[in-house]
Image (tube, rainbow, N blue to C red; front, side, top):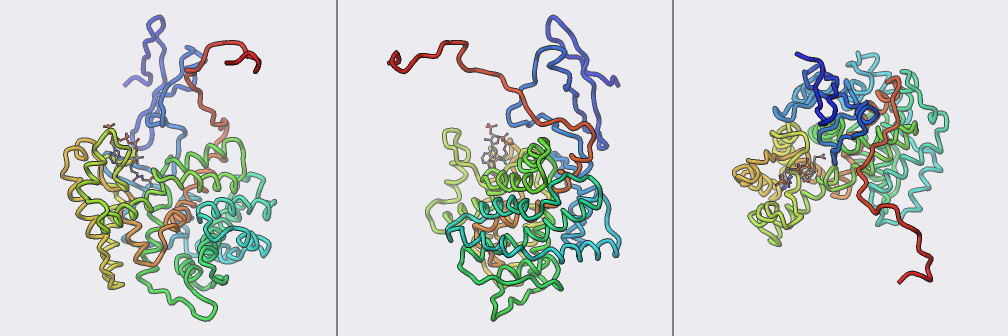
Length: 431
Ligand code: ACO
């Protein structure tokens, strides 16, 4: 097969090199398109644009496949690795042996406290402050307390230090954001607890009453973090890379990632799903009406937790979470009517020609909220938990970008559609 594709521009035919990934996906290298022809590609939303090559995560959206460093996502459910093990795999590209993982956990443990001055920042936020705003601000604030990490290091030593620090402190920051919004007294992490258990302790323990972590709930929390750990060039990860491409530091880049994740079309969908299910439950709207509104092109309403830019098949993470939801609710002896509503809504949507033709399936956000709700996580913290989960991916992608020689600043072009040249009109002459 030819290694070039031909582009016929009428007056000129040019050859575009074909590049091929390790799973046979193919792309056209158009990096010289503008300099050779004066044309640019036009792809709003970047649905057909490969912004980089990456060896971290593989998705086949048509088949519903997701792999971290080659390992199918289903194996992370079956083998139940620790979240930090998954983070290590994504960031450093290999499964750690026991010594490596133990050492990494020690590094994470050593970093779990926040600088006292950083803790005072929380007092400045109103109790109504959205936790996602606090999270993004505090991650950026970390730059002020760790100037030694502002130099962008690509070596393993830098990445061990920076990643363990960030993974550790994001958990403390997230829990403190929640405690601030509830006016709860601060509490310290317990180094002997594993990552997810320590997070639950930081969220729910009181100085005079320790939260007893149920192993099944810890498992569910761990699973939620792992399933969100990376998803190749999604909106927030592309944001991290976009910011990183200007050679901004890791804290600034990840803080921007949190902001991008916040929106309801991305990580904020987990919260929007619960709001939608609650409205159905309260009787404010029926499930049929939701589907009808989602299909109506004059209505901006979308069926939240449905559809995906890449998956044109069932999102494998949603499949795992749907099963995990049954288990967690049974364990906690919770009968959540929202789970039944979600399942009925899914059944109705998957039979409807509108959703079938467009290949719209439940995504990761459709069932995750139901599990978090059962654990006692308030809805405004859902996307914060997604951020904790996604952090290893952001760090891994940032590091991969730093390590890639010759990376250029991300700077798309545009097709200008505004006024042609005209003169400035002084105020006195304006109508
Ligand atoms: N409800 C109703 N219609 C939908 C939905 C939905 N949830 N999702 C997509 N569609 C329709 C689109 O309107 C479009 O219809 P058309 O062909 O008649 O114009 C068609 O399906 C194709 O969808 P796109 O617009 O190409 O999808 P896109 O890739 O731009 O958007 C997105 C993906 C943002 C996830 C979209 O499906 C959506 O808004 N879903 C709801 C929000 C959500 O759950 N977001 C979480 C995504 S997962 C994550 O980020 C972690």
